[in-house]
Length: 256
Image (cartoon, rainbow, N blue to C red; front, side):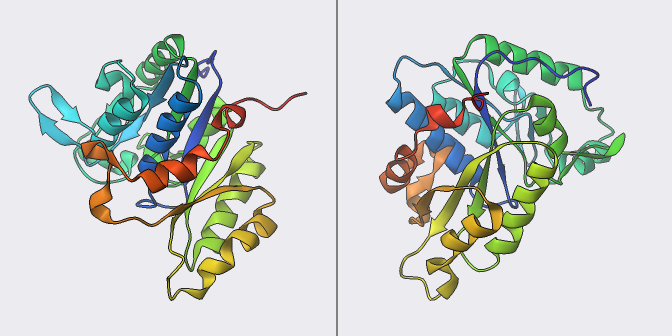
């Protein structure tokens, strides 16, 4: 990890999830688009520090998630700045790095974050998987929680809407709070009002009771062909749900 974490100038948000495949990148893309629509003069910076499952291109490894974030934020920085640490294997970063004997260059990551910070008015940082995903094979206990804690941005939790989400969401929120981090709120993704899953109707209320933090919005489940952020396709229903939230306020530190 960093000997001294980068000191970021602009306000921002760290986006995590209860698990992989919850829709964290979709939600982050939608937030970037919402911030641009809510304040067209604002420069929205995006960063995905770690990415795995990247594809091989002539220029090197490329993350589809980073491409999507850059598009929806209209962030013109190079992709290798937006996503400085990349792996081909679809594994936790620490496992992927160990497999190819790659050292995690934390100083390079800090340099990239500082570069994005300098050219942005607001910064969205997307984690990888959940909070306890390991990042560095040399430091096996270093997980996503550690850079989140070092950067000290308010944290947004993206969670599923159906059965099982109460346990995963509550553990994530309590872990963040025990680390001294502020939970900006929760976004419940893939909500289906017509689902046979009876928990869908009650989970929002119970999440707020258990976690002690607000569910900012509930994002509807949409047809897969209408949610392909890697092809710049994002269902208007998702954008509408996300734009209901004042994201400018969520990125601000609490008043003292």
